[in-house]
Structures are given as C-alpha cells and as structure tokens.
Image 1 (tube, helix red, strand yellow):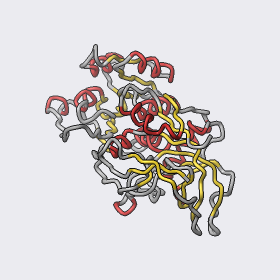
Image 2: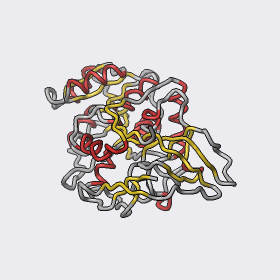
Image 3: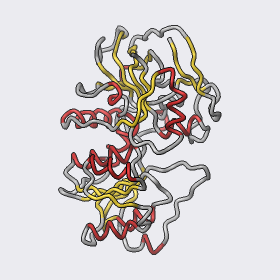
Image 4: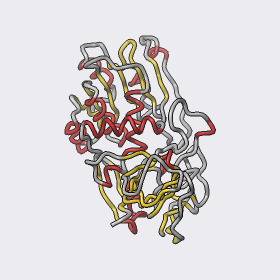
Length: 339
C-alpha cells in the first residue's frame, strides 16, 4: 500500500511517498479504498509549517478524500462493503459543540486520506451522494462543510436575504452554491476575470471587482438599497473585516473564517466602522459529522456539484501541491488515488 506522509512538515520536500502493508480494520473500524483526495488551504499551511495546530510527524496527508468500503470490523453497523464514503474533517466530533478533546483533524494529528487504503472508525465516515464523481465526492468535507457552517451555523437567514461572499476560493464557491439553495441573493467579490465568470456561472447575482472597487462595501450598500447584507461570509479576514462590517445590515451576521498569513495578524475594527452597526461577528471553522451529513443531504437533493479546477494522478501528488501553492486555482485540486 502506498501513502504520502509528511515526514518533514515545514519543508517543501516534506511530502514523501511510503510503501507499507494494507491495514486491517479493528472491531468498530472501516477499511476504505480511497479513489480521490483533494487539497485545501490548510494542507498548504501544514506542509509549510504555518498551521496553528502542529502536525504529527509522519502523518498521512490531506483531510479530504472519498472511496469505497472494502471491509468492516465485526461491530460495525453504519456501513458495509461497497458503500461510497468520505471522512469527517474532525473524525471524533459527531455533533454539538466542539470540545478540546474532539479536536483531532485528518491529515494533521491523525492519518488522512492521501493513501490507497485508509482505516477510520465508522463514526468518522459519511455516505456520499450517488450523483457525484469520486473527485467531486472528495471535495466536500473541509471547504464544503465550512461554507455550510457559515450559512447555517448562526441565526436563520430571512427569505430572499442577501449573502456576500469574498473571492473565488473553495469556501466562497461552495457558499455561493449553498446560498442559492437557501433562496438568497448573492453578491460576490472577485479580483480575477476567471473567478468572476465562475461565480456568475454558479448563480452569483452580482460580482464586484474588488481591485477596481476597493471600497466594495459601498457597492454592496447600493445594490441592497442602503440596507446591507444579511450575511457576509468573511473568508479573507482579518484584512477585509472593515469592509465586511460596512457591508452588513444593521443586525446582519459576519461569519469569520480566519486567514493565516505569512505574518501574525490582528483583528482591528475601526470605531467608525463598528459604531454604525449591531452586526454579529461569528467565528466558524469547518464543522461536525452532523454538519457534513446535513450538507450532503442538501447536495443530493439539489444535485449540486463541487467545482473542480484540475486533476492529477497519484504519482503526481507533489505536482498537485505545487499547482495549488502557485495560486490562481478556481475550484478543487484533485489527486486521483485509484485508477
């Protein structure tokens, strides 16, 4: 069995291909033949040694992947051979509030899914919708759940409400799709023509070029008749938090996904930006298995398809990382594990 392990986190050559024995599932575990895995920004941060949670040396990389159940332990009741499954980002967090003892993450503190075969506890797995390809099914559990949590983890959105999304990163692409599923109007920002085209194709009602319009909150206000947005899915914070605050309705919500940059960042809110709003800033970070299950039900009901940027073969995993690290991707970067 071949797996990519992070032998030297913090170094560009830290992703190393290993050979090993095919694992066997324990009583409550499931053996999955992985068909595809995908990259998220956190995987680049882990490789670069800049992720807030230290990676276990030698951990199998990547949180997101999907595959077929090939064997189960004797006590497993949730799955059987032949089922199509994906792993939950937090394999021990099944629902409710996240507690410190449930904080393990696939591809960081416990083995991830950039491997030909993976063993996970049955409680860490979720069935994937039948209409999805393996590449699409492998795209859900990090960025997809993060976007779902941003949309559903706070107060309910009003019918026909307005959602603002920032840029064309993976979370924002999912957020546009999920906001449309909820019957919302979407105002997206983008700094590239390719990103703007993709956002519009996904259903964004308006796309603002934030390079031409750095004070894009003014355009959000204009498009909403001065009312502002009911929800801003803030994926570029803290740098953009002032514009997000100025975009929010009086009692709007800002769902904040903190961006880890090259330098330590601080959340600074100018008095003049905060004084004119009663908006709530809500921190979010991916979600539980229950959130993943709710999201996959919505994906199945609406035949939603994740956006794919490019696919690589298993032997091309280092090239996939380099493609992702180069920036400019629009959609998920996929590594095909099984042919």
